Length: 368
Image (cartoon, rainbow, N blue to C red; front, top):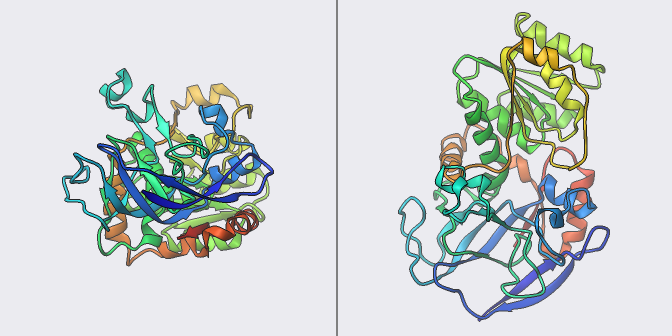
């Protein structure tokens, strides 16, 4: 019997309630994780507000939010002895894992598109009022289903650095891989929140000749520079789309960017980003997850310039292993610890969410 707390989410506009629940046993193939840290991601805040409805993804209420997490093995079900790289697991092994779970049998999984699984399961979509209860990151435990991908965290990568690996970092790595960002190319990143900062760092690590970050928060722009941005554009100073596009064209010798990454989450950013692309430019769309939002653009600019737009939802689970390698290689050269500097205990989760909404420079984290 495993007993612990969960922060039950009953619906938008309602405070989280701390419940104590029990899991009778860990089944074959399952892994029970003792959660040590879960970040408050933008999608968690959207769900809290009701603008990103978990019900629309097949979830039910009440549930447990939280997905960007790290923890240690508490119990291994029968048949589990190693992680997805073959590294031995035991009680206390620190691990990260994708927060979504593929069936490995459907046509998409068999074609290598596991993030498009036809029977995809996900943290935050299970019920908090029935077993196994531990269905999201805001709790003492999280139950990994049988067949889940899981990776041991290197000893020299701390929890505060590892906690962002299974969502923000893996997603931007996957996005830049999808558009095959090349050595010597110029990359523009729209938005310098956690996703944007990771995008800056990953683009530089992939050999970008120049990375340009765009945001309107001074702390974020300062962080973007620390994460490797060669130039930043403050939307408060370059107040119009025309102004910002002109700056990008100047910084790219008049050609425009090779790759633009959108992690603002506002539809209006898309048309602006497309204008910043040069011939054969590739646009990586990650940020817009709220259904029903639209924008207008001139498709002739898209056609005549041979531009490509790639929508990125989730990532191939194997990317998470590469994300850990990235963190291990750059843990001393990047200020990764600044990404989730605000820490709150689980009992203060309502205060943490209020703070996450107020603060725009770093993510808040629930530390257990």
